[in-house]
Length: 114
Image (cartoon, rainbow, N blue to C red; front, side, top):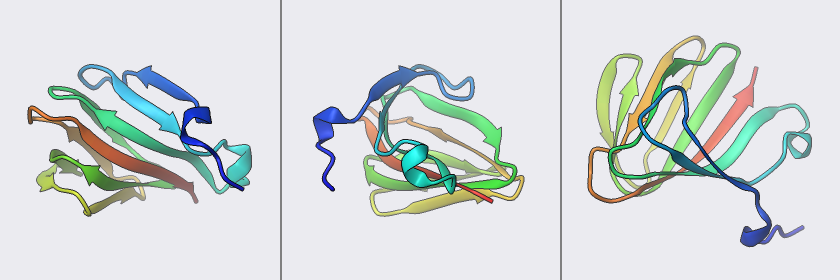
């Protein structure tokens, strides 16, 4: 099966009370993930925008950095992330992502369930 990019649902939303709007493109539906995941999407974080700090219980969220540079708050410790980096948060720990640069940041996000 091939899903063409222009047929993937897109939405703009504030995520976890972060700053600004995050552009999301859903790459699969919950039904297509057979109850093993609740999100598989690309995220674009514009300059000055962020995903607010939040925790993940009974699930793990992975980010793969495609483009740009962001600050990843890993359970209270800030790390600068770059293309090719992978971040994960689960088991009750928390995270946030902030774009402090002048260029958009693109991530692939996957949330797998326990």
